[in-house]
Image (cartoon, rainbow, N blue to C red):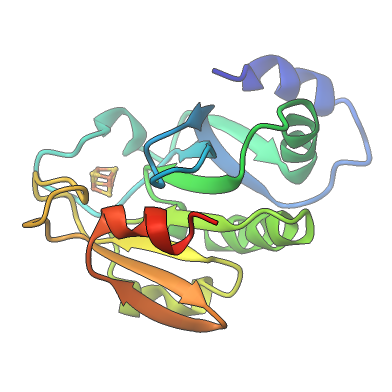
Length: 177
Ligand code: SF4
């Protein structure tokens, strides 16, 4: 796991850091969030989706976590050149809309595609998806998106159009190249 505590302490002394923040519980590298891709996973603090049997109850309160700036992220991406995609998990990043949008714009400027896991409905968050490339939506109902009878849906932006990908595993083929 990447230590964002030390990074926060060091970077908070830098007066040039004025950009928007998001509150994040932890950051790590992932290998299963997108089939066949290495992701930099941002676990956001705070969620109002109230899924029964929530998978990450520690991340429900909006208190706690660490305030992470765009500068932190730039440092992480510079030192950890591994990720091919950025992935938002949580918690739910859609409840920090300003930071979420600002960060996604930065990721695109840096050349990283962006994936969002959200308990909200895809159709209800359209105004947040300008710089998002992949959405896995739907409340947690006990069946992961990797299973055929899941309630969660997969949406991929291709040529500026959203397409509904029927099976999660098909992403490997569709975005594998
Ligand atoms: S979206 Fe995730 S963090 Fe939020 S209530 Fe549902 S399972 Fe919990």
